[in-house]
Image (cartoon, rainbow over all chains, first blue to last red; front, side, top):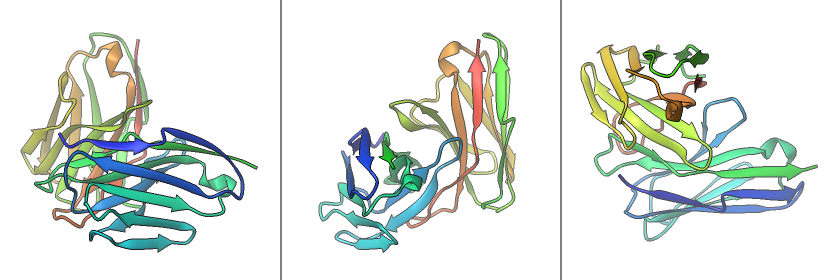
Length: 111
Length: 113
């Protein structure tokens, strides 16, 4: 299957700091999606990217679709305690049927 | 919230017993997925369905079977549960196409003792 590698695996930051995480793929993706999972819940979509080079924001979150189509980046500015959770990159496979997820970045925010 | 219901939400079962998890949707989405989530592995695809009676394997399908007899329901069966299948299982739904997102249920926590 298509592999999605996320880094870092986990982050411990102070409230107010900015956060960056990324996702790389072994093959080209035509869509990149970023999800957040709160404890005890299913993942929820944060941002969707559909074009190489695209930069999209959702409040304090900004994500970019890499030019090579093999990577994507998510930035969170001025983190707050409710940003705590696991962030996943995801996307459909080459035949659009399968839907793959990265291994996740666990974010901890210290008040 | 997307209309996805997983049942049961929690289950403890013994090794060797059969277990069936149910995913029910009210959104009429064509695709349905089963994932398992384990620490350090993210969400791994077990099986998926692209229509009624149409299913295919994901990356970690060994020991699991699925069935989809109607659009609304996608069942995941562990024929003989093992301790390695202790996990949190998520169902997701999605419409076909390149630019469509997946919506998730709340998960089923399964413990095999």
